[in-house]
Length: 410
Length: 140
Image 1 (cartoon, rainbow over the protein chains, first blue to last red):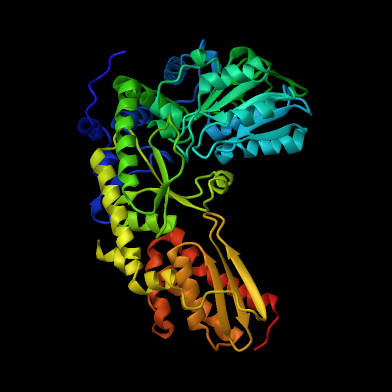
Image 2 (cartoon, rainbow over the protein chains, first blue to last red):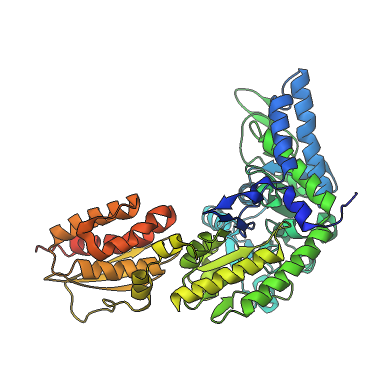
């Protein structure tokens, strides 16, 4: 694939929204981990579908429907190639990663897992990779176990070993990169560890997929989920990757059109994967938008993006370390551009509001990871997160903004 | 710093959040109420004594703490009915952004109207006080 030289000022021109002003100031958008901004090519691809080539997919016998189906299915090929999946049938389109995890918990969880089996998650999961398993536990009688993390925000291997010791664990569902601590988990090692003990592995790739190349075959991971909107694509489209043989054994999650093979008044038989899991008219426009986002990211190259973000993260950590009374949550060796922090003088929400007034967007609160916040000993924290369009100057602007806040509360 | 920031975080708010004058759990009280903001985990406890003496324990942002403290000051000596009326007037100020001359220092919080997500920080102590007055079945 061809990559273009990484030039952040050129890249910023691809994102129309970055020229916007907030409260009369230049927008400094440091909330991409919540949802990233969209490049022109994604916006154009979606508009083009609606203006020139739109009909329902997989149903019509007419030209428009066939062309739209082609574009929709081309996006599946792009996702498959992006993840290096063995086959396009291993890519299921969902609404978002949350729905992907719910799909696995419901369909795989209630059939492949038996009462008495155990599921392990870590202490640093987003609610989306905790609550579906709590529901499965309550509905289906599996046990839910929580593997500890260290104070630095890394996997506590001793704890993980202990959770697996009795041989009951059949699934490890764990983040590939924490949305709070920024830590990457050692995915390959985790998969090998779980497989050696007879458990499958689901990786929540919402954050990781944006920042580094993911190869599901190299990882040998069983399930991988992510959302399109964090990957510079639109909202409303997410991905579930699962190994073909696993998907083939899974019953449907939602029922309706598209997911059936044949239907009578008495019964129905299921279509093969991936369609078995795509009931109803899908998010056609958004799926095509996701395909455009993947093209965009791949043209720049994930290695170049990762190098840029590494520089930002190092700079950001250094800047934050210079602010007295500021504490960054987590200090993992392998971490990405998600910096969550508290300040002695100011509450996270005051930080977010005061930064917003200066045109700087950060997130504040519990980050959909309430148990983790408790684990780290804080009730709320502010988070600055970086993307491929983030600049060193924007991080400096954050530093200046935080210094002003310190002045106000001094 | 733009003037709008100062409008929201007036000196009075910063001062009361850092050094509240009406904080602390009293040894004796007639009713109490609590409030929690599920979004951020902030919480406040309000203690009411007959005769309209209010104290609070606020754990949260500057807006929450300052609001609790300014509330305790504003409702001193007021009857539950007067507190209820004042709560309504205060909520009108923080949702509309229009100051109400009758509310005095409470108007310092009018700026939160620009921040939908922060209005709850300002109104939470009032909700906790309303709960105290309801729970305590007080008549005053």
